[in-house]
Length: 111
Figure 1 (cartoon, rainbow, N blue to C red):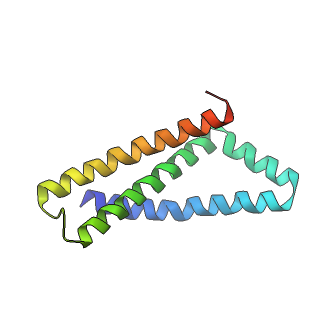
Figure 2 (tube, one colour):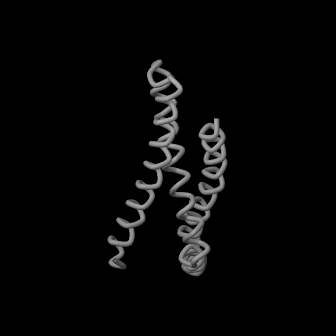
Figure 3 (cartoon, rainbow, N blue to C red):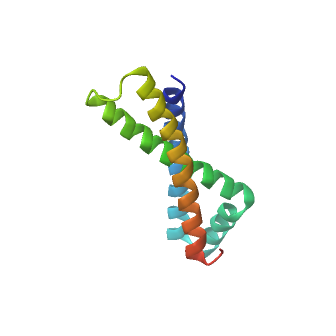
């Protein structure tokens, strides 16, 4: 039940995060000043925290969707198995988020 609620919350968070991606694309297509400002905002500690949360929401929602896809086949519906898959979804989303951010910092030469 908890994972279902979190799946819905991350879906809502993805809506907000997609607006941020759209704002970045609009700034990139409008002017250098707008692009510099949004890059500054996303590069601040608060901006990075929001982007980190967006990344986690994206990974968690994706893995939750895959979990539901497996359930649609009729597999993994037993209580014990469903609980294990739920914990795997949570752990997987954290690991994937960290790997994405590490790869991003490595690509920028910051690590």
